[in-house]
Image 1: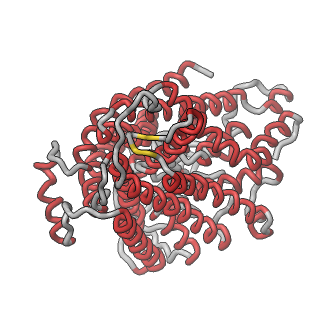
Image 2: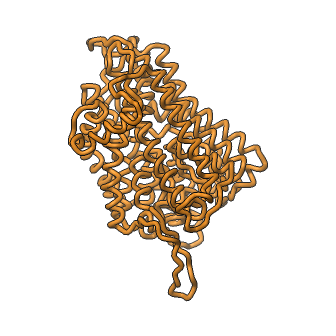
Length: 568
């Protein structure tokens, strides 16, 4: 491993940490409905949206009403997107004359962008029109990200409010996040990407002559605007099939660095926002420290195994230069490993190298990151509320160890709270393992695999982990554009999104109605290095115990078989 690789890691983490306080403070003002720096600029537009939508932002909702609003909003968007995908051949801004999207693929894609997954069983440049890319993909990149941040804010309100019956107004939260957080960041970030060479136009596809005499068609389109929200909103996906490895999406090393920074930016800031809203900044920094520690461990492991490379090549006299298969030479092993770690820590799914080409234990890291629930900075909103589920479990275990009623932020964690937290943690794991088990014994699914043996199982495990974890990246050896995978992965995405959100909001509603107990000498502190270590251990143990049997049959056994001289 090189100093350049570690310098890249330190630079990304340092910039995210530096931005956590100012952006977190700003987001606190936004979510509390307070006046802030953009109120004079966009305040009238916010008021107009409320007036046209008949929304009273001061009218707060109990958790059930908040959840119902979330589900209605999500379902309406999915139906509208499905209809447009099926009818895109009749709509404007389709210079390539692309036809309707197949029903199963349209269902999968609509659900994918609704759930902030952005799993793509298609090549964007040969399937989706300009209008579809702008009004379906880009719109849902904003909407799904805003919904996740709104739910996280509602959960924090549930933790910090005392004997309250409400956790906020979903519609107001959605508008404020979209208008004051995502839109301004995307305007700045989009212009930056254009300055680096990312394209942004509505021109027809261009046919050019290559230097060796052959012709090639270059896809055009509104790329930069979709690229920046896919990073900031941890949506993932890509305008082109090559995703962030494509020079029209990710032109330079600087754009690559900014993309990684953007993926972690809002998730990092939300830990500071949590501390501000809780009235105890140490709580927010404790979560940031836990995320950073797990981020370090994942990157160190992935970078090491990619730098070591394939021992079979060394045995045949090939110089050991690491594993460059599936990687862009302009990014190399170091930043490709860093990007893969970040994108699966944060449920983003954007990739600048093919995860299917990673070494067995290198590929284990992004797979395990997703299986942990992607709580390491995590998706926008989903990372914070996913981490808080583990916090609830950790303080419960700590309370059992010292013989006290567990508490967090002065709220007693009781049986009902643990039921909600356990459901939010275990349902995704069940969906991953059940879906992968079904696919592993279905002949039509096995025909979609490019590899046999343990690597083929890893491709299946990664697909269902990515779908349930709302990540969107893939082991590229799996052909997912089949009736079986389009439908089962689509339902897996819905389970991974809403079967976590609903228990989380129920937990928030239950905690909001509780009294707050004053700290006592026996209170277990949750802002110390001891708690950070305990929380990290619980996350790793729960993830490890749940998924280790499946991982041992996939990437782990593939590693030992590779050492014995066999590849798949």
